[in-house]
Image 1 (cartoon, rainbow, N blue to C red):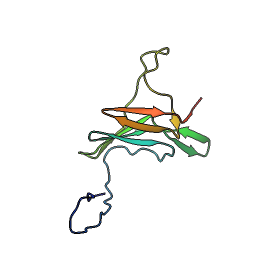
Image 2: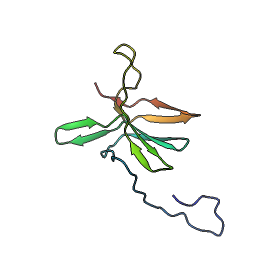
Image 3: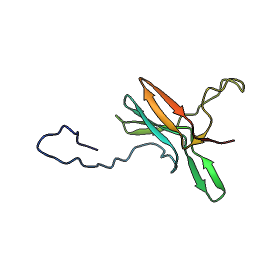
Length: 109
């Protein structure tokens, strides 16, 4: 949306479609999108193909200044100490200060 709610003169907001650079994320459903500062974090979701449900990458980031997409590789410290949440869909996410909190959803087993 390119216009703020406080614009004067009764101008209507208008949509501008941007084309981010980088490798696009496959289409997913059941994901969340959260903004921290100038970065949009797209978390989890699933993609349904001809073989059944496949979970999407756990994290895709969009730098809103450069419009560059990236999908970082998340590594685990070790098997006993999981550093990232389990793959999921249909969850909720909330941003508090500079952290994203993830709640619920259906977890892949």
